[in-house]
Length: 496
Ligand code: ZN
Image 1 (cartoon, rainbow, N blue to C red):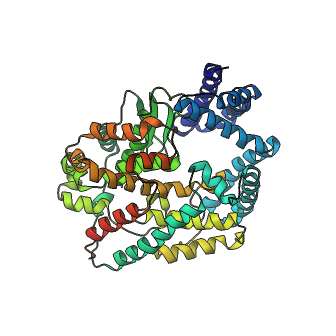
Image 2: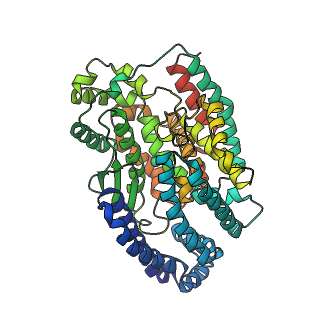
Image 3: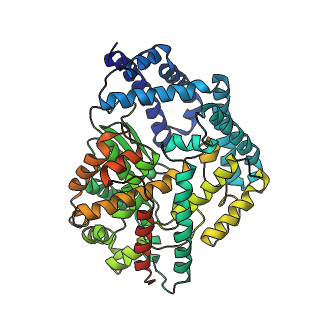
């Protein structure tokens, strides 16, 4: 028995996966409204086939045999990943799993209605039941002394547990919450009225298309479409697709979501040919992926160096609105700090505080320390404590995100981790490369090659901490993020 015996199964797994990905891309971008009910039947069938392929007893036999053999690093990673997938799936009774999937579909519809009608009571029984089931599944999968929440955290960020995350969020609480309070008390008020003037959608589309190409999005291997919420989806390293959402009265929104999704796409396009179309042929983890998108969006994309060569072009595009707005004013505008209620609209500084609130609540829910009746009050209290604002209703409070309705617990922390990982990589690059010059001269090919060499090419062969250690000589360390945010915003608001 050798690795070739596994190849047929890898090909089948990939083919089914790609078909499912294509259906989901289509649903979000092109499919007509009424198509879902019937298409769902095919999707269900293909999902069943994928499940059977992954858990095929013959595959398991091959994997267990290969596990004992001398393999290349990527082959070893594939075998390890697949065996983990099997172990996770085997432990949950198939019937219960199926029932839970159906419940989640319903819960997401109920959540949508609850959010629309501002009615938490409608969603509460579903949330309660989802948490019970997710905990039950985590119990099945638990292999050591870890707590149940650790089990779900591993799904999104292998190697990161409550211990590491507590340390991370405690530092944010200690340094960033007071920094925000200082900014809120500061006499400096940044004016960005210009951002909310009327911007032609067609012109925005033209500019953003150019912008994606400028930062390194390869149109021969990718396409850009529109959707309600921007996202990235990948089939393999030669087919990566992103979406943007354009608003007539908000210029920034599309600009930064285009740069953000381009960051995700560049990661996927840079993965090595040898591992694309395999189970390790995609980004290392949610957090690592988010680190790349946020590196492009925030660290690079919101810097003055970035806009020096780009802003004159933007000004020409939208002369009526931007003629009188200087580069300095624009750079201040895109970095303006303002505590807000909605996570997806948060600025760079307050964003991780939104995540901290969700992390604390998830931890409590998994520890059974939450009265679901009072969850919205708890949510509102935390917003007041960390951001200094209180939601007026649950639609702009606890009902704003779809994640819990979809059973995604342990997912939120990876968003904040991503920003912190990006800051650690950037700190290392500042010491060892001319990254600021690359950005100011628009040399994004050099940047792309650098990230490919040290991170992207490996896909999921290595975990986040292994990649960080190889590149920066150190495992994940939140201090770089705290330093980055403190320096950047202290300077912007002339605080010290
Ligand atoms: Zn993202």
